[in-house]
Amino acid sequence: MFEAVQFIEAPGQPEPSETVLGQYAEEIDAVVAARTAKMDFANTASKAYAWWVVRQQGAKLAHFIADSKSDKEFVLDLTSGQLVEV
Image (cartoon, rainbow, N blue to C red; front, top):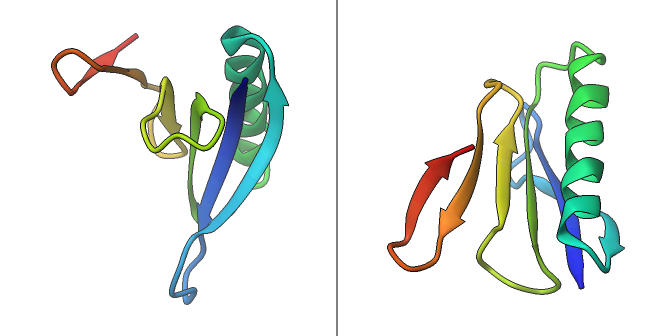
C-alpha cells in the first residue's frame, strides 16, 4: 500500500501539520492524488509552505516528493540515497 501525505507549515505554527490524503494499492494513484493536492493548494494563494510525499504506508522514505515553491518533482534513489528530479 502507498499513501499520499500532505504537510503544511503555516506561519506561526511550531510544527507542520501532516495529513494522509489517501491510501492506494498502486504507487501511481498516490502520485496523482499528491499532484492534485498540490494544484489545489496552489489555487488557494496561501502563504503557508506545503509539501507532498508518496511513501509506502508508514515508511520514513519517500517515493515521490514535491513542494509548493517549485514545479520540480523528485524521487529518492534508495541505492544511493540521492534525490533525483523527474
